[in-house]
Length: 90
Image: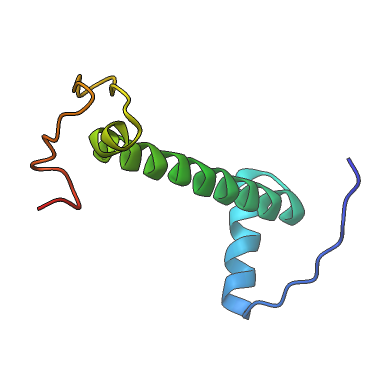
């Protein structure tokens, strides 16, 4: 894989902490920074998927009613309006 050079400015304490962590892990500074970025990107993606899943679970009945579908977990029948206790309902 081709590599791209990045120049980053950080204060001396941050630079020293990064050097120490890379040394402790037995990797180069480049590899250490690369691993941090990859980990952060993966966590963001995972967090988004979890949030989307939670949203769909919370509003499953609302979507089912709107589109005339039967939700998997709620087992509501089309045309029912039992939305009590769902977020965003009164």
